[in-house]
Length: 245
Ligand code: NAI
Image (cartoon, rainbow, N blue to C red; front, side, top):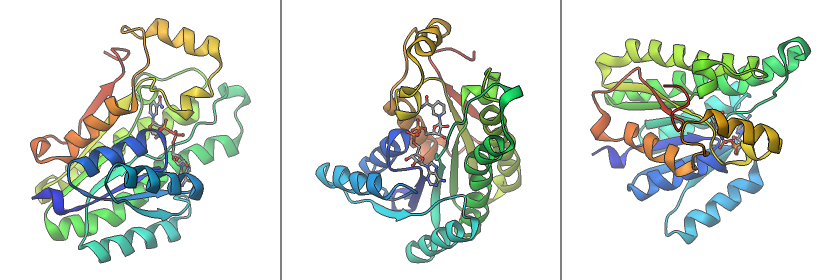
């Protein structure tokens, strides 16, 4: 039943977002991928085509609230509503608190937290109308236990947890669930740019002593998006090799 509903994934062009798109397509869903990076969105189209699927893509900067809302409204109108929303787009601007600039703080909050709020506000209109919705947001283990050098990022990711629990309460009676996944260290471009000693140090605090894969995260998101998870809401699932237990 829910296979027919449109799934929207932000930050879809690469990394975890790309894996989520492919996983949802494999489940037979209609998927729209949103990203600011046009080149990598084209790559996503090629990759999905090679895998025998088709993805709908929209290139937009999700911090442009007006344009982003327009894109989401357009998709909702075209496909009879948004059934599944995956707030995945995220950035880091790491620096110790004392050196962190206002711009670095604001930018991370804008992309990671504010844009998710904007997407939820648009998506929940058609979800309420259709009496069905699954909202999954990418928090982080940093948002659960904090992380030195990531005041902006950890605040945005903890903010997503508060936002998720709040809309889970507001929308529960409408058959709309809202949950977070909180990955630890996952192999993507975001973690590739970390200096080698930081990566090695990170492995020492992961009980499993290794980074996770994008598929580890994508499969959990697909679970929350599916009918099996219909009675689970307001939860935070850590996918972190045991870091935050
Ligand atoms: P990534 O950096 O590989 O991909 C992020 C995607 O978001 C990119 O395609 C980028 O173009 C897009 N994006 C960034 N700003 C945007 C904007 N303003 N408008 C539209 N699109 C924009 O990141 P990765 O590693 O795949 O992470 C995905 C999510 O998972 C993020 O929210 C991240 O914070 C979270 N996460 C990742 C972890 C990791 O170890 N990789 C750990 C915990 C959480």
